[in-house]
Length: 186
Image (cartoon, rainbow, N blue to C red; front, side):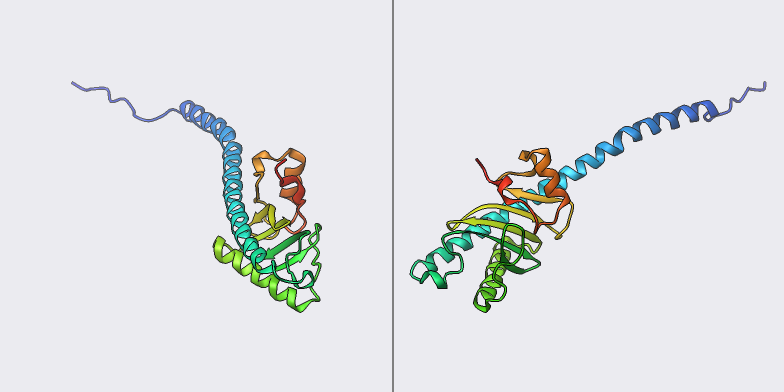
């Protein structure tokens, strides 16, 4: 007796339905996946900013101990506030806009590189960062693997704690141009 062999496989209609379902799922998943990748990279940059913050505070404390007995003209840190920007191991004191404030002074240029190398040695990183110091206390740090990298980390306020306006300014600008006052805890 002959048996009727049924054909195995999918019909064209079944394939179209499966492809449509896959298309809908991918449409939902791809933007969500990008969001999670961005958040992961920012969390990583935030943790590096915290490491740089702690390393900078350690080194600034060492400077404070050395400078206690120095004349005020010979001090690198001074009692006032200053900003410090470092990119791949080359650092410089700067103003709040990131412009070097004492590049013509050879002694301070040597101290700039010493401070930058010491922070990098402690932190184990050589990205770009900007530090705000006031009265020998590190107030805030912004960090990125690249000077104009999209993924930047901040500390003590992390990027999750910044408002949308501040976060947009941090994300879209260079590390050197970052507004450090928005990252200080109130």
